[in-house]
Length: 267
Image 1 (cartoon, helix red, strand yellow):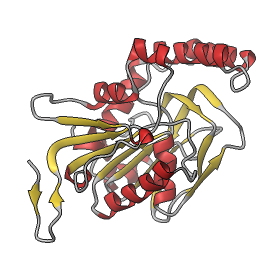
Image 2: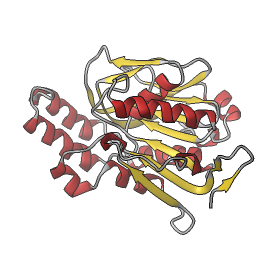
Image 3: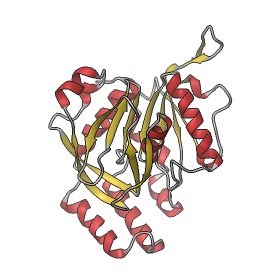
């Protein structure tokens, strides 16, 4: 249970986590795969008997009760079709809530939109990627592994071979890292793929929660229902990447292990 501390705030409860849902997937796709929160629970939940996970659709203005967010040991911020730099009321509030969580030194895992909004919260910037929409798979390369592994309590979980293939779907990216942030991985098209701030913020531009089947389904749905956003030619290239440069079980396990180690310092 959460305990009160002398300043009147609730202290985080061990094994208690929440997922802040920043977007929806198409209903037909969700029928097959569940929503983003389901995917993150499947990715991160390791000890069902001792863990408690809550999901809040902040994109729909559904928030934890006042004073409740601070009781979570870890917070996951999902992807979104919205702009992390936008001015929608829920996005403005989310930036404020995350800034408060940073001051409390709660663990925050930001993915895609979550990666971008955390950069803004901490004083960096995000915006449209110069390369436009990136969709499919890409190889990300981790930087200076020996030094980083020594400096971070979860550094032992960084991929041993220095690179992995990840699923990507984004048109925005982190443009400028916050002061004192550590760049962990880059790719040919996106300089900021993985980064950390102190020991309690980890951000990933790619999607560790996505499977190959889900990516295939989502790409086909998007090009069929929104061809102006995803032309058939680009969809065909992305689908080819899923086969020609696949995210292997080893790649998936490496990124999952990193997320596990960060969110709960598991080995």
